[in-house]
Length: 309
Image (cartoon, rainbow, N blue to C red; front, side, top):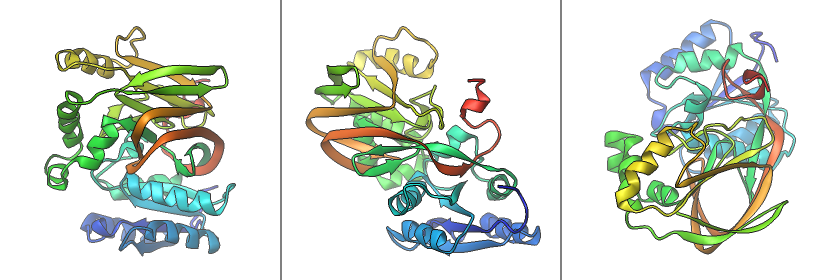
C-alpha cells in the first residue's frame, strides 16, 4: 500500500475523545494535505465494531482506531469475526487511560497529527492476531490479579493518575491473592502450573506500561507466555526488580516461554483481560493466527524485520 492521496481512510473516534481540539485540527490538516479522511464517532459499546464492518463493506483501505486498547480490540474483533482473511488495514491514534499496544509499537500519544501521519505515510504490514476461545486480541491477554485489578480499579483513580493506578492497585491486591492452580497443555504434553499473574503477549506492554512480554514480536507466529509464581508481600521488591530487568534469564518468580498454541485449565474461574476487555472462565484455548491482519506501524515497531531474525 502506498502513501498516495487516494488511499481511503476512515477514523473511528471513541466518543470520549471526539471533542479534543488537537484531534480536530489534525483531521483538518490531513484533509488539507489531500488525504480523504472520513470520521465516525462512537456513542456506546459495539459502535466501533459496527463501524469497522461498515468500512470493510465500503472498501475503505485503512480503518483507524482513535481511542485506547479497548477501542482497538473492538475494531479488531469486528473485522476478524466478519472476515477471517481481511484485506482492510488498521491504524491507531492513541487516546484513553492505557495505550499499551501503541506504546509497544512506538506510536506517539498526545500528538494525533503525528499518529495520523504514520498511518498516511507508511505501508501496512501483516501481523499476527491472537485468538483465545472465540475472541481475538492483538496485544496482550493478562490473567490473575492483574486482570482483576483492571476490572476493579475505580474510574476516579484511573482518571486522576492514569496507568499508575493499575500499579498501585496491583501491589495492594498481590498481598491478598492466593495463587491459581491448574494445568498447561501444549504440543509437548501437560504440566501442572501455579501462578498469581499470567500474560500472553502478541505485543509487549500491559497494565499501563509494564513490559510483561519484552521479547514479543507481532509477526513471528508465536505468543509469549509470562507467568508469575506465588510471591509474599515481603518479596514484592524482588518481583518488581525481575519485572524491570526484562533481559535477566535466571528469575525466582517469573517464567517465560514462546508457544504458537496452548490450553490452560484453572481450579477456579480466571479473570482474563483481553486488550482491556475482561472475560472470566476456567478453560482457555490460545492460538496464533499468523500474519492475518494488516496494520500500519511506524519504523522500529516490534517486527521480525527490525530484529534481524
